[in-house]
Length: 372
Image 1 (cartoon, rainbow, N blue to C red):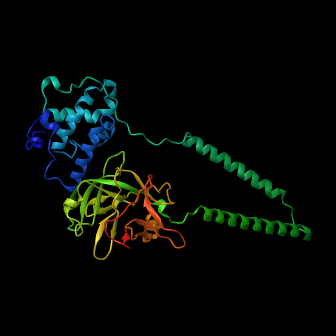
Image 2: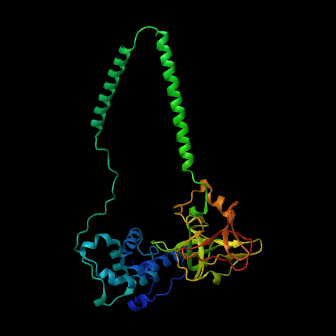
Image 3: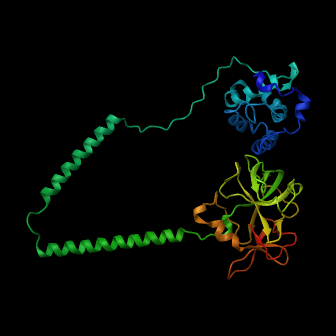
């Protein structure tokens, strides 16, 4: 353990609470650091999430300590002191981590240390197995044998009931009519089922797209892609901010990507972009010469729903790439002379991009631009 912490100088409890951001981190670690610092402000509600994450790691960013461990520990200390022994089992991994941090990373005065009762016996963590069928194999075999015997007996009875010899003309006519009737009923049933399925299919529309206000907390250059930024964006999710990759390096300086409100598409299928998983997309207007952000109106908050007028519906949880919903709808997104973002559809009035308050979402200068 001394090898792991040799490069980390102990901090006092006061220093830990104000610990600066860690340096030399990968893009993924920086995103994790931002997420843990955000979640640590919601103790003790966020303890279960910390406990689940620490199940497979020694420290919050892996197997080595960092300043985020110190900062989160300082915020969590008072909540952890209030845990009863009955709550130890649900927080066992957090308690293990906290005890390690206060003895290796943060210099905590003896009278302020987290005191853990190590004599408490905790139940083993058991992974729930799928329940087996109530019938055992012997019972299943017996049932199978009984069913086979019954079927055999029925078949013999059916054979014995059949009249011997060639059926008369009247019987043949009746059999043909019954066969024809059954065929018509089967055809009608198939047609009704097909009509029902067709009615259930809803054509692609903007209400299926999960558009929200997002707040970029921090953005950095992608370590392995010159054209990409990696942003940590608060989209209003309970689990914390998202990591989003955007190909905007050629269009915006890094400082323009910091601490600003944007509009995000939140239900596209996550994609891996040069080793970083991107879980949303920043909505922008663009021409061949220029790209501009779609700007949320004043007073917007992270996570607020954004929609086109007339399409305020419950969006898909995640768009199915095979259904091509985004590809079918996005070509209708554009900007007007008023710089407002709208959805154009042939034969219908323009539907402006708005929120529950009826505000407009605009760009700075682009008219007739594609929005994507």
